[in-house]
Length: 194
Figure 1 (tube, rainbow, N blue to C red):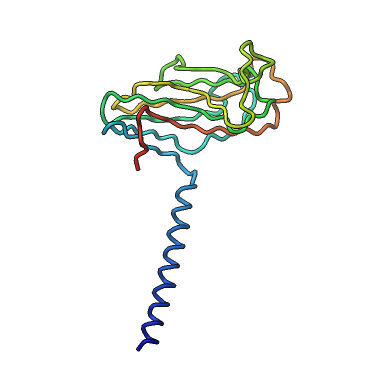
Figure 2: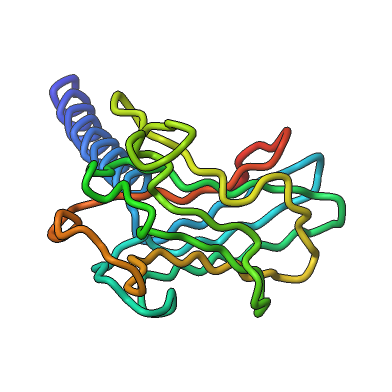
């Protein structure tokens, strides 16, 4: 009888071990998956939903208009009034050759024709800007796209454009460069909701 109980115990132990390994593998996959960026931020009972989709990717070439470059849409809505959010762009990989004033960005809200904010990546090249601001070579440099913006209870769509301005001369050193950006939002006093 003891032998039979031992056998059942071993079988149960193996089955539980396999279930544990499968569960950890699935949890790791879900944690590291970059398929979609969907985050809810809870602010004092109010839920702010930020949907950013997949990471920013694409090929940049000099273009006559921003619409011909890379665009990224982000939708934001709140369950109650009184919420604010900030939107950031982390430059995780930014070669020196791309730190030019002709590498531009603009962000628009809904179908407005005037950008909410704009800039260029030349400000991260000390030789081409008056401020001497430089890219953080030892880590990630963060660009604040939106800061403390009110979030409506109806869905707002923000569109971020990244492009090489083809209406001016672009250095040939900008060709064949690899870059990487992360886009994320925060809310003051917020916690991440699942």
